[in-house]
Length: 497
Image (cartoon, rainbow, N blue to C red; front, side, top):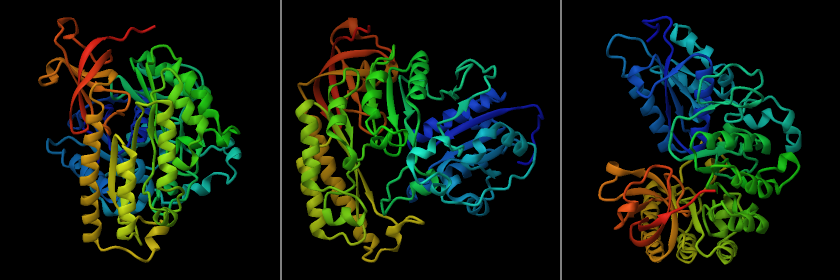
């Protein structure tokens, strides 16, 4: 695995783990590599370099990343060299520590290597040893004052600009001007679009700001330009992603910038839906709720990071709110959009959590009527405040509480799906035809985000609707449910202006 059998070969496979933000970063890397002459291949077995975009969020994600790197290293069974390279959050977070503990990887690259990724890979495939970076707190690389960050040259994955207007291959955005470099790796009708990177909050359990850095918004013009390019590539739904979308614009001098940006994105020709993800409840303003709930083309969907409902636990987490304020926020959204979707994540087993705290969380979940909930058990993360807390719970207690809350969530979200029977919905078709067993198509309703929130299975008794294609938008009526998934009967096609 130290030299290539064909010196001129430049074939690279990108493997992406983790969240939608990582997907955007991988597509930036794909754009840079395509512009530098690399051929992108789907199968890692056909590649001269396999780049694994890792996740470093929680312990299981780290394990999955390491297992994927090891599996890529095991591909070298036909005598032809392949370089296995780690990038992404795990690589940035641990740098030389990861390289030392995982010699099967040929290199560990940090975010600062992304700008020269093509040259880095050529050198690694050619047998050069890459010296990995020492981990550092990336919050220290940016000014403390948010409005001073715009002039910084710190590497921000997903924000890349092509200022020198090279001749780019087809499918790389775009061929000229100071625009974002990106090449799609997933050709479905939905695509993530990065609003910002980093986070200024100091949640006691979260290490993300240390390796993603402080909060930096992209300029609205860049976001709109990329939205237009995605529409030209066949995208029908934009999923706006960041570490904290409610902070968007604060470093640009306008905390309400998202409220003016959303109608602009919804007006982009070819875009049917705009979805906002990663909302911080304590920062979700009534005016933002109103825009999300009432702007045509913006789906009434509220991805709210509650994390818990007990005020005692939330304060130890360095977070705000509680059951009553969270329910008030949901009620306000549903008053404007009665069919609005709502999802969240919760952490159980946090240091100091009592049985009464779990009871309070369950009380909130019963009253909240959320469409989807992710349940995570607390584990210490390197460099976080909570790792030094007293009151740690035994692993078996954490597991028991995860099972207990997960069981309740499964029952509640299934019941919520049943409540939607009889609703008229629009569905964005993602799969159709022979790939959908027993149904004419499968897609998502407005309350269902890609991957995390279930699906809507489509049936029809009308031959006119029997042939659907990915990217089609249809009217349907919900006739049943299976867990969080819906079953809906197609009643017509949505005409596009």
